[in-house]
Length: 336
Image: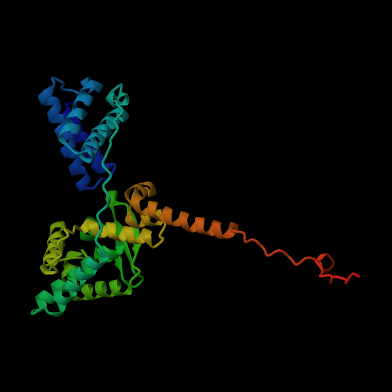
């Protein structure tokens, strides 16, 4: 039986070659599993995975709950659980010690952070002002590229990693479609609905045609190197400073803002889930439950108003009595 560290290496190789996981996911797995391996070697006398018991796992899980936030602990436990599933599949263990462990998490409900529309308008206005007032061609081209980046982030809900990895060949500005390779290399198309966004992307592509051709990436700097995650973050921070925006804005907040606006505008959850590249509509529903709850309340109010108007009855005026039943005034006869 191989050592635990050797087994982890084999499992990660399997994730890379068979599951085709991206490097970012593999890095997270590697950190989580090496941390688990260090715990086993430092705190126990266990050398092979078959000797790991449910009690050992429970001790480690308890430690994770003390040292990490619920979301991080949940991810680390999932990484270890996946390793044991792999061992079970490969018949390396007779019994999975996770089968007797029930993990429950009470994660705090954290609403996705969005950007108020007036701040988005101020942000974009600052970029375009910067472009129009640029003193050099270098500054104008940078501002043009920055405008294209922010417009695409805001109008499509694209992830920052997807934007930085976007290839020029996958951007079709004639029909306004972009082919995205998301998490796990899952393919999806996004449709650009704004002519203004398509125009700024086309203008950027023509201005940076030489650099794009040498790189093959769509978003590049003036040296022809692909834009990095950090360069986009620095770009956002720069314009927040220029626009005197106090709110700390991250690239992912553009994605949340796009999703929130889409739901508020009536886009159904299943369609939005596909647009965002989520693995299920249920995940989208959980993430933006505050919006869907508001939509349900709004729908309930509309239905309630409709039902009230449909069932409301007015009291009709009583009909006039027939002629023969009406009271008649009979004059008194004079007597005597």
